[in-house]
Image 1 (cartoon, rainbow, N blue to C red):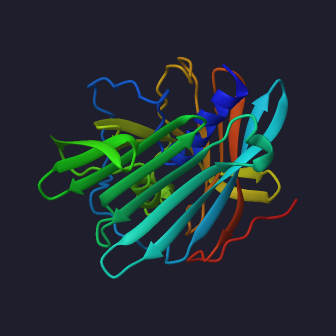
Image 2: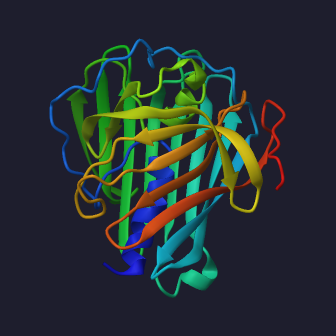
Length: 288
């Protein structure tokens, strides 16, 4: 697999794996019906006490090819508060110096209920090389129904409806919901189940706490106390059976993902926090 194709998956890694959900290729493999281990934590009505209007966090994306770490792009997450909902968005783009090789410009947006943080609207607009994809999902959480539109672009879509069971997240709402969960209260090896609607399907995945408090050096930033998490991976074109992804989340009131590392079919990928602004709580890393 070429580095360009790996970058295609790497940007999905950040825009999707930060959201604790991985899939292989443009159409993910369907998960088995085996339920994820149960947990006492309920992600249906979490509420927000962690992030605020105007918060912006940027990550730098690296790809390891033949033992060389290449800085290939960035992804930026933003929060905007409106009277009736919270808009969260993420845009992942390759650097201009990398675009001759493989150009990526992916945009994700979700509208979250202010009380529950459940999504009512989810949008994905993907531009990766010559491949384009537009998805829009309207989630009726009360009546457990998803109305979804998909196609090569916004003006050329099909539509359908599907009944979903229980409350349903999208790939962005999970980030901001999990940030409001007190990971420090988990037991080591405890797994949290997550239900996500993506690519016209509902998916059940999970994330496991590896270490409650781990000091981690963040490239270019310094050291931080972190919660070490391990999301469930799906084997396929990108990940081999037994591959493991690692996520380090700040062990403070902000609960920010600081770094992600993962193997892929050729080499490995890394996302490292680059900058942040308008966080609700003070945040600093200890310089080495």
